[in-house]
Length: 373
Image 1 (cartoon, rainbow, N blue to C red):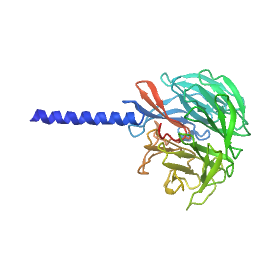
Image 2: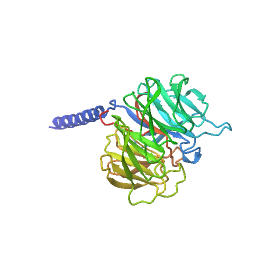
Image 3: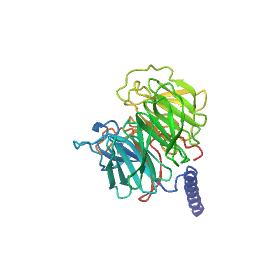
Image 4: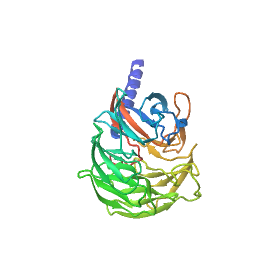
């Protein structure tokens, strides 16, 4: 009898493990992969009080505990750490890339050493890497152009002149389009990566384009614009604006950074919700991602949020103010803290999954849609 009892327990444990593995495969995660959040600092201007300097790694499967700090380059000419502007991953090259206002560095994810670091004329901003991990669209620091860069060597392959102030970049999951936000333009510009030339645009929006995100099928763009506490929606295929949504119940007010009320917007991976930053009121506003874009709730955070992204499975939201929020319950379940128990905050972070020492899956610094992926 006792033997049967233990056999049933072992069978149940086996079924649980099999179920967990099946759930992981369904979510696209390799069975047994370990998940880490890589946070690049200083990721809010060059303020070292939000986590110091380097790549801070947190264990997503163990209450986001601090694991280690990886030394990085990226210094001002005076030797002090420079503002991190973007972070992106190339799995084929086993590398994470960090841009600063002066240059770009490639860091090997296994050895954790800087492979190369290069300065770029005109500076650097928030970049995006092609799905095959080989090509990067690297915006200048609010100049009129983007550089197309080899991820392997850092060499410039081509330059695209867009408008006046290059800023944010998303590489479409299809690999067939690159979306470029110029913060002196009311249009979202789109390039064809086969020709590296501008082909179309979406808009015009109510004001200059600030942070934005897109659906996995690249049919919709959700755009924040200057002077709007809210967001607008663009039909990418038709090239038109189709909705204007304002936050209800909260007044627009002065912000300490970025200059616009809603700097930061993310789409939950299942594309059911939009999370919107509110710098003045220090809140995250949550909306339905389907018309009429109903405002669902608001979540207070500990500091001014200027960005938001999500874990690939959609369980966690990461506002740049440093909280870890359970998306389903809206509860703050943890805050990021470094090895000195200081709060960590950054607008540049990305999820990377490892099997052993090898990275096998990576997220994105933007809260982009992943439905069907």
